[in-house]
Length: 486
Ligand code: SAH
Image 1 (tube, rainbow, N blue to C red):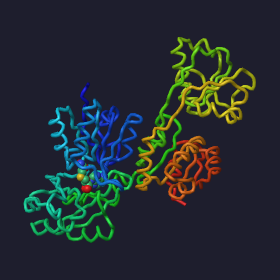
Image 2: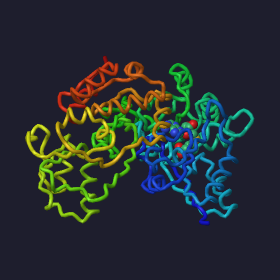
Image 3: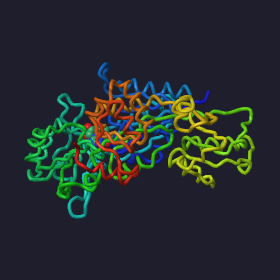
Image 4: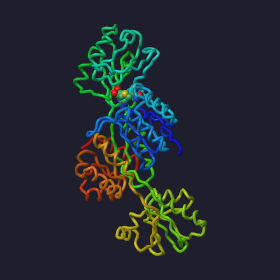
């Protein structure tokens, strides 16, 4: 049997787009992913559907998966011939125990690669607006643990060398021992007025920053209740911190958006939201299963073909190809049930029309996903007299429910966007598995509907709607997202 392969991958500090392309490629081909607590769960949305995901952090009912156990799992999975990704926050070689894992794999004769990532000390500082080196303020930079294996966890290091020899110091895991750290630096010669900055949950929407000096920071941390994960950056470079960094100034910084979806494709608007600084979770993730219709279907008999979704358009052209049919043998006019499906029809160099332009007479075919085609009443109400054809079925990829649970637990959904009526139904159904109702969701999040239809269905189901867009565009959405909450 083929021996598997293990990738020890750095996930970056939080922002999902800070992972390397190589790391992402590994994630996309993995058969199993073992991930740590500090890995952004949104990254797991990029794996193949329904692969095995193993959480290696703390759970309420079980203590941390021990290091030896993780190593054994890596070896076992690889021996079964799997492509394994071990996903770690930041860079795997910075307090990531990658050395031990690599040694275990070597001992077992398993091939592996290590893929670096952006470490939190640099990522979080940069997103707080502070470069770790600067020609005027800092020529040297050190990464130091704020917690070690000693009895009381207080790091046993050469404090004198650190205090007097290094300009910028990033302490990891250092919040608990902050009083000790500040004390050691000061008694070993660092000026008590040296500026210090703490960045908690750096590069994420919930990033918080605190500044002070070696003398004042301990008290400030107590008052502000700062906890891990945070980076403590000591040194003159932290003077460069302004009231808000470039990251915190982005229009949608600190928004945690659930963008409801009903298709397997990624939403362009969701990406535009990310570009404006929001954390976006497209939910639920869907898998598309093609239907194949045998024997040949008499498309040429129809005068109107209505496509319910973009996927149905793609499927239709694939079906023509599969059956060696020429598009010129089709006489029908093409209609898209949504703007997106109309645009998709045009992308195949065919004219497309909206449903408002439907001619009353004419033999009509509707092509759509299983869920719509099986819903006879809705279909007849929308499309009148017609024949129908199922193009595909969409099924929810259950691992995205795991991601959803984590985000709910961590209070990382404060805005829910419904682009369509169907998306309201789908999300409501999935959320029931997490004991969330339209009411509880309306209490925790701002509810935004794209149009009258989604608003009507959301209201019917019991949501309290905060905004309905004037127009279903990104600009209109950005506008309401920037308004103050009710
Ligand atoms: N391998 C990781 C570090 C793991 S040790 C890396 O290279 O970044 C865990 C510590 O990293 C945390 O206690 C905290 O000090 C720091 N850390 C990780 N993610 C962080 C984040 N998003 N913001 C601030 N600090 C973070």
